[in-house]
Length: 185
Image 1 (cartoon, rainbow, N blue to C red):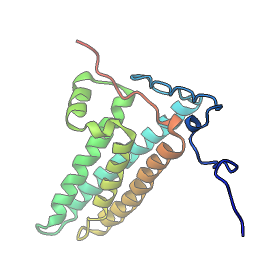
Image 2: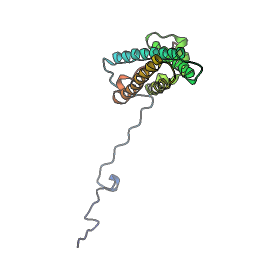
Image 3: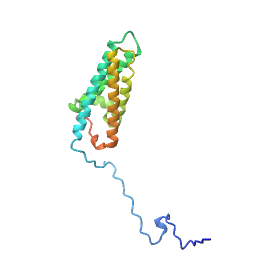
């Protein structure tokens, strides 16, 4: 039979303030509001962003082309015409957004920021790419070149959206960029 006297056994889970001889805990640091943690941007981050932008522009052209082919090869009136029109619209939107990285046009950038602000963050852009990838899979009754091009574009856009999201999670320093700015008036 084992006896323990409370004064002989100190519990290790007692707080520091309960022990009279223990040092006082350090005061918590006040957060620095309005400051961002400094992230070391790699030297090749601009190259990675440029390659992703060019790849997105190519996919936007492919998406618009499959939309045009979907309308041209469609026999009769069907829901595929609306899917093809949305493919053209979103392809032009993606191409225009990526073009603003290369040559900023204030009025276009202002309209894009106001109406499609989600594109200016990497997370929103990733989800947009994944969304329009699935839109490409919806081109069902179009002729053969449109359906094949739509599937290939959809697969590439899905991989691209997942790649953007993965880069954001694994290597955030590569996507810590400043979106196209509108000059002050």
